[in-house]
Length: 310
Image 1 (tube, rainbow, N blue to C red):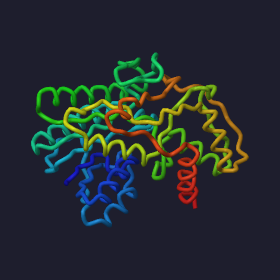
Image 2 (tube, rainbow, N blue to C red):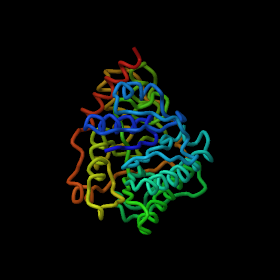
Image 3 (cartoon, rainbow, N blue to C red):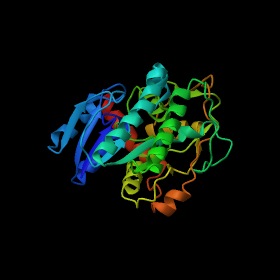
């Protein structure tokens, strides 16, 4: 089968491409390196079944394929807030062009949505039928609202019978090949611990997240792609085990044997206080739940960043 992955040079894109190639598929990677890294696709280029196209998804394209995996969008606050208008264009136009390309080529679409569509949730944990609590004019809105309109486009294309689009709402995912500069909490804390720097915690550290190892996340997306037509989502994909940022920092200090201290900074604007997925739908429809415990996943990620620093 021939897959097109937008955002192929990003963290999730490179992992999905590697998985598809290992399964024997053809993969076309599309990226303009806005937030992805060219180094991420160097290993993919060693496979003759991988083809790379440098292209900005805000501009239409016509690439024959059987499945479009739309992953193109900066996903960390420092990246998407750097150029919020461009982020919103990627989220809306990038999704529209993925759907139009799929329609022309009679292809399916996998849309990478996000837990951020729930905003700062008033319901905990967050099930798929919770409509969210999103600030439409905040500093994170370019991404949060952008992903919400992306889901709207996919739902309307599907309702109109124009495209078979599947929605996966991805919660915090971590693992090897994360960018060292993307500003996400796992990569930030690991790098600081390995380099003997103070570990920066925004706010009081009692805000919670649920961290899912990248292999588990990719496995869930593959199951959704292979599901019957009526299973369109949205489906939450994440680890239902919740932990505070302070607990995460303490565990990273332990696993790196670091003597670094904690440094508290003002809370980030619109930063969600709670984040935990309900994955009952994924358990029922995909027969999926994450397998790797946080400690084991962090050890793999620490080893990656330790090698990166050397």
